[in-house]
Length: 201
Image (cartoon, rainbow, N blue to C red):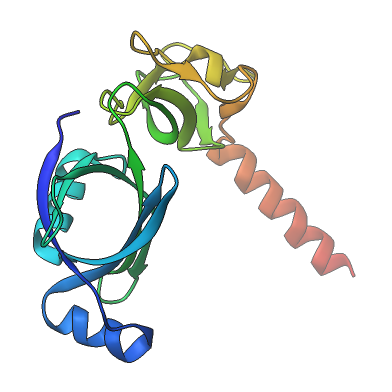
């Protein structure tokens, strides 16, 4: 995953009022911390940040150039608050990272292939925690369910990991379960049975 360069402004207004004024100006309130540095309150351009997240995912690495600071810093979003109605970003926590440093992140998992006929695939988790180089974080991971029969489980250990990426959870952690699909006939028979019991009461 490539880095995205983004400019930031120091933020001097705090509290709900200050945050609202920041967002009205087309910026997102954020705090930058890590590696023993004092937290820095900054504001990021909302449109540029949203575009980067849409393209690179929640684990996008940013090169942040803060006005008035000498040199840019690398950072990874660790907590993002969104307005579920407006679908806008409310606040962002950014963790400072260094080149060559390994970090733990949750990566989306995509199921590929089709399980056996007359089965249902039930997701237990859509992400898996991994440890990887901060500048080489996978945007997504894949695991196949192709041909799996009812009763099968897909675990974290089944996920295809790129070179240099390690699981941060137990390999037996269940991500998906393959279960038998209930046939329409069975459902109708169950409904008729319930109706007959109700009529008899």
